[in-house]
Image (cartoon, rainbow, N blue to C red; front, top):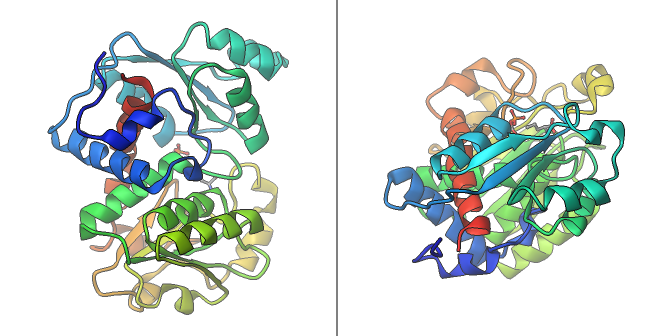
Length: 316
Ligand code: CP
Ligand code: NVA
């Protein structure tokens, strides 16, 4: 299988893991977005015939599971469902054993789990690329699709401002890191007590400083969205936080991404949400279905961004 010509920055990604958005540098991130756009437009073809991606998902998923499966199919490869319920993982077979055995059968693993440390453990023991398909800490595949969607709306995105209003969670963390690499200013608006992780904040600020952008945290919704080019939100209670749902709904009162907040943004602003969404909680039905919404393009772009990622990690 030949390397993908025309994307020199991607050559270094062959055989690598993607555990965090910060595992990529800015050139690699931009090259992945370019390849994703080229694959989407039919300007590029990649053949991963004979390659198999294993999916280990300890949490529910519609978009990530289906987009990885279809991405591999479109590239001529295949996927295998290795959910803990159907493998010995559910019976407690150690990661060290599972990862080494699976490395003898499949060509890459996409893993959705709780602790980032478990993902890192898989990556340590596996001799094949391991992809973060969402952990409690990060969602790097989502961020690639998100910035592809922003590029489609604005062309050049360096210097733009993306405002994320809501919980300082996994999705917010990857947006901060990936945005910083791309020179996009990222403003996180959240109630006190729901800020992003301090280490990720520091890391993203260091990356932003190197790329002429900023990462801010504010505690007032209008201050967060004023003049922004993209308004983004996610659920207030992530998977694993179901018991905190009622308490979080109280804490996030007044933080709904709605038409009033949208009116404070740049007139060209787009609305994004990683989905699944709760209309009437973190986002209004009007903001979700209105003309500024790019939410379903964003969901589609998971497919194109992950095709690019799989091509970079597996071809060549
Ligand atoms: N956005 C996202 O990751 O969706 P799923 O949980 O359906 O995969
Ligand atoms: N923050 C959400 C994202 C779901 C795609 C969660 O972790 O449940």
